[in-house]
Image (tube, rainbow, N blue to C red):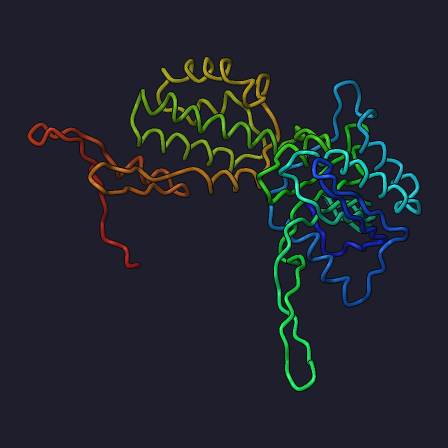
Length: 352
């Protein structure tokens, strides 16, 4: 859990990078940027709001040989060791980003490097390095009094409501490549920021494990439960799976299978599917782990709980009270009409 409201921006360096393939240069500021009292809250909101609105999926620096060979890891470590030298290190960060700005789709833009204190993560106050980039410019009008007329002047600038790219590198778990959050609102250069510049992998924590296991369950429901049973059982399987995660602090696979899978014949199918598909979800040896509640809540929002029928009718199942669908919804076959049907029991219609 992260709290960015009490954060102090101790230092802010502002530079610009162009696109190497278009022969655009790089501009490095000689001195740090001075933040006025008026600018400080606006810049904090510009930098941090995207991270407050986003699910906390953490990353860590990585390298094929050793994390110490990751260039950005080395620079960030130097900043944490000597914060007063952050501006000089920010030039190295900008140069590193410029070296990766070679694909024709990559846009030029401003680079902000900040040293942050009072960042609260997992109830612990830590320092952090923030690296941000603004790319998309928007037109806006300024107005000038010229003689006896008020004239419109067209200018370009960035929208403070939308940060294009950014990462927060927290001064914890250095031995594992630090703990990192990243955002990227542009999808035309997906490898540029995370892979080429930051050089990070997803952090294999409880949030990652919970998210991956639920995604695996979702695909099992679609690929195995649906063909073997029907759409209702597919929905109900995911209903039971999500509720099992929601009510437990720790996941244990045998308990999960006994509670969630109604048809015993599907248990060996589940185990076989896991062996076959595990590398895709990175859950090969995953049979127990702490459950991340935030990941469960996020997964619940993405799982479809609706049965769509070819007669233009939808049946919406309740994920909060799954026993209702188990008790009061029945599926059958009508010989006369040669059609399937759902029978729904109720006492009275609810007023909307």
